[in-house]
Image 1 (tube, rainbow, N blue to C red):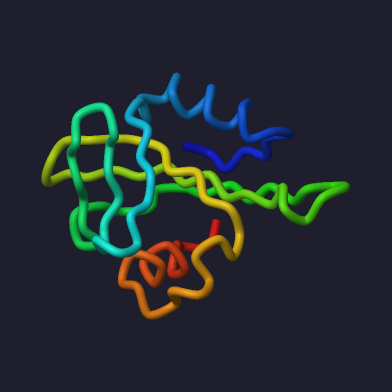
Image 2: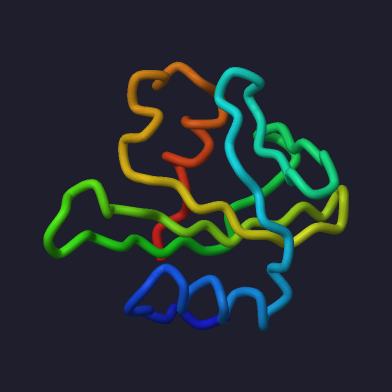
Length: 107
């Protein structure tokens, strides 16, 4: 996948879904994992890789700052999307899942 700049979170998610990133994940910092709420599948930091990420800065509201992660798990044969607000989990910086997301590869 080539690195693309998207204008909106929605646009990035739509394009990633076309590329096979079809599972929507959310983060559970207390459980040290990301989870698919539809299937209940939980992935620990060692179970997935960050393939790409896209950062969006809110033009008028700093609270609109988001990162869209394209993640995959060869072990479980999953490709999905995780959307996270900047600093949303900053108070839990010792979390292994937060550390994994903070060490994404540079693209």
